Length: 341
Ligand code: NAI
Ligand code: MG
Image (cartoon, rainbow, N blue to C red; front, top):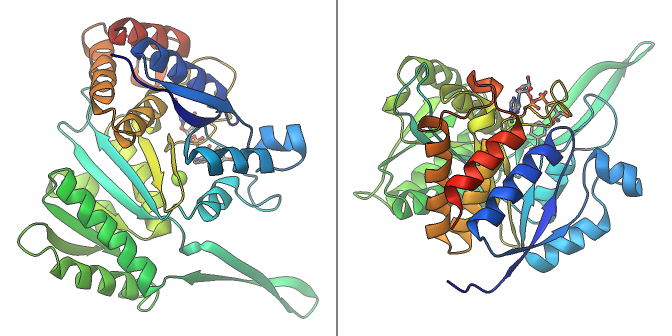
């Protein structure tokens, strides 16, 4: 089939980023996906290239193309620059973060098929933080402010319900801590309840306090279908979901906004294994499948997902995190053979 090319920004990122990005681009090429990549830097790679973790050239590239595939970006802990991921989400108003997980290899939990929708711009991630001095200690007290708006909460709730309708999901569990953070997460729950009324009879809604939800996800994950979370809870629980299906190497993520869509893995730059060529590239490959869905190439997305499944379970080619012995490149070559047109 002749498909016209689709311009998209490609950000290799830091740590294992360039390795999993290379692997993903290789399988997309084998698949015949028509992306025309504009390679740009961000994170520590952006700092090295331009002194800025989010260079203007990168922002301009995404602004023009409205579409990006991104490797993980390292953010210094404590001091140092502000997260380039958070800045990217703000720059393009990427308010919805969608993180699906599905069992692909036999493990502790069978038949997991869950979607987490995370509010991506608000909550404690606004990170308005400051110290208060007491006596001679200028940093005696640390204060952080969380912000959730009714409009923002309704927007993400509506996104989640629309996603449910589109993908045949039946129930959304709203995750909160409205017993303690009565205002900050209460407004999120209230907004979701309001929006849920518009979908009555089509998509069910219930709610759960975040700590209880964390336990239930281990005891009985099958009771859930979709989770709708505030920013910080969504960050935490999406890593937990990845744990249900074999780890961070298995979990794709996507950020949708009014101005762009950015696809990435849920995991970070994994400095402990960076440069060794052993990272599992499935997260980013599955993120690229979501990207194919997004641009209307669902047939290619499905072929890629099937190719990954077959490589894992028929060819038995797996990376070390899945108790296999394949390198990142060997895994990519195996998937490429399976998806080749
Ligand atoms: P991490 O996700 O990078 O690593 C956690 C553990 O999972 C490590 O043991 C790592 O080896 C393993 N792991 C992660 N991805 C893997 C893969 N594809 N294959 C095999 N094993 C994998 O989390 P960590 O160490 O907390 O963060 C490292 C850096 O990444 C930090 O600077 C953090 O800010 C950044 N980060 C960036 C994200 C992004 O760009 N979207 C998301 C999360 C963290
Ligand atoms: Mg995270």
